[in-house]
Length: 622
Image (tube, rainbow, N blue to C red; front, side, top):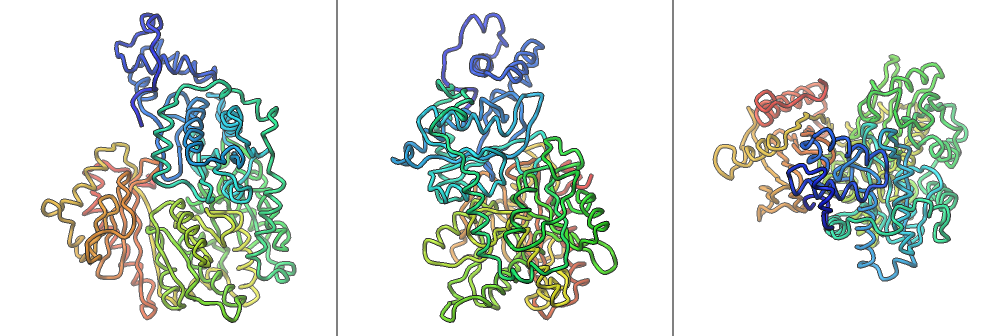
């Protein structure tokens, strides 16, 4: 985005009194102190100025938030590159300007605003307050706003946008990020997260109106404006009703003796998962008492991300042992993602990876479709989708069963948009996923949804128990039928953007200028695809089928031994991630051999391509 602040003449008296000796920074400081009405964040900037902390002032005020894979996401605090009252007002003003241009009926159809339970005392910043300011900007401009009266799961916002035929919606959440962070997730009228070019156009519009308008700070408008409606009851009722479309064994659910434990990770999930289990005919899952209620400090976990596995699921696993519950479901703080653990016969817990859960969901959704479809239903009209860094297991199932499988760029925004296109063309979509435990069962919500996924996995476990099978046993059956797909995903931390750029540029100029590596240690490379540049050696014209995404780094290597490995940068964190998967044929059934081969290949990938020691990368577990 632009340089400092934005338009507005600098008051010379302010600069004489407080000049930093840097005209650009002085202008930004003046703008912040003129515009910010949050006493806490205003004081943060004033203190930095008084203490001569010019470098930190420049870091905070001379760059802006940009749209990443999940909208805006950053730490809460003072500054144009942080999430706070002022930057949320600026972002909403830009969105208003853009939507007014795109929709002649904007003021008839309205806008949806939801929020989670995050907050930070030191900057007087909470998701609810940021949501009120988002609503205020629009209400002050006579736009009807559907503002939820309490916290909701993220999936409720895209669901409401479609149900209420609104032009767009915003969810204030940083999902599973650390407690210091917050975010601003934007959904388009199709119920999917915004994609290009909307994000770029909105950023331009934000830059054109950075000074808060009259009324933009009036958060009380949410209580007083006749244009504000509370959609909570209607959306919750409709969502739970729609959920029943993917419930196939209600009688079994009503009779089962299986017990489930649910943790909502100090977030929004508890009430809604309870209601979803009820909609499917289940007894309510047993909640983890210490994690049931919202807590912006996430006091019982080191990080609020259920994807981190057994270490963060400790409380729920111990409760499950005590209650004799065999399955634990964990929704992340905004309830759009789901982790699952199952107790094995030896008493140990298996925490499933996102890719393993996808194999189970993919099998289940197709199995239920086959059992329930009409006689004239055409399997060729059926689709499943996954992001390109996710397991290829759905591709293997699709090849054998005859339905279609498609890949998208990483990020659920790409899945949501593509699913909408397919639906508009009369296709039937059963399931879509991304490996970072994001699942979309059915098409009521065009985004990942931990609430629906939790109850679908419960029904699957109940059905399998009737066949004397566990989820883990069924997973092995799936792999034996369609081929083992063994994947490992991890990351290195790197806080130096030039180093990250250098690592990827070296891969593009490996043995010679503009030549990619032909092998990695002893492993021969069959194909290379570079999403950042649009190159794909497997295509006749050498051009990638997936859209080019210049804003992030991403290169995929397909090896001769059937392994696929991707290196990419994170859209929201200072990480270089790797995703490696051994895609075996059904006849290659020695899992140990496949796992060893994958491990050796990953070691070669790290040593030859990432060179952590040379590049000063920090290993994830350190």
